[in-house]
Length: 272
Image 1 (tube, helix red, strand yellow):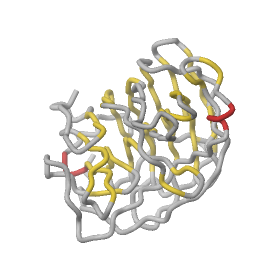
Image 2 (cartoon, rainbow, N blue to C red; image 1 turned 90 degrees about the horizontal axis):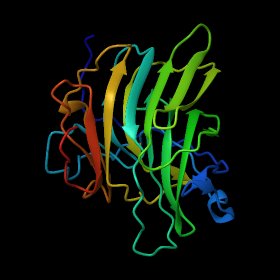
Image 3 (cartoon, rainbow, N blue to C red; image 1 turned 180 degrees about the vertical axis):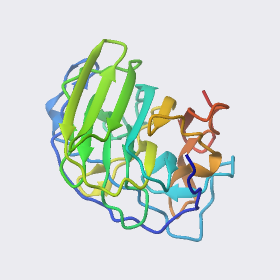
Image 4 (cartoon, rainbow, N blue to C red; image 1 turned 135 degrees about the vertical axis):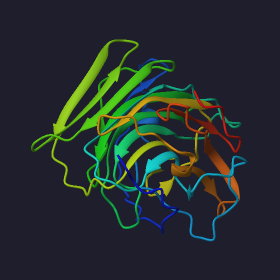
């Protein structure tokens, strides 16, 4: 498959949504403090040019206020998949602070003006003095839908999104526990980009403080049923203050082009 590796695009529209966060805290039921939070997953919010300071790898082609990872910016995409191990959220300096992160695969939402996005993944948050973990799927502009999977740090997740006729199939599986959940939903976005993303989600109507969840390895990546053959030019960093402060940084792709890592902070990790 041939596709463009064009550079950064303009500011995408921020989709503001609210939902009730459901899930498990430390393997148990979520606390009332945690469930009071509202969390959603937005399209890419670009940092206006000129491009800000980037991670030391220096080869990423885009900056974002809410995404880091890899995105193939053009093509005709009918499926996307990936695997990762649910990371452990590290407590913030002030344990009562609220911090958030999401790990997902999706189609659409990268390009300027594209407010469409079909996606599924996990979230790893710090709420009410404890860690919270949840699996979910979402099709903008509808709200996030939490899944009933009881996930835990260290669980290996497999996520697949596939176009059907007429509905798409979204499958989230926990390979560590043998649980899985699958839904079929209509989707009519342009199918013009494919993504594997670590996100600072939107809480209420603001980009949340990113939780320190260490390094996440994205592996077994496919697009349209084939190896995406990723290049570093398809990667981007998450930053704030006009790109001067790097929050999350991807690695170079693996030698095979179907895996990479994302690390909290400005230092690029080694690829898986």
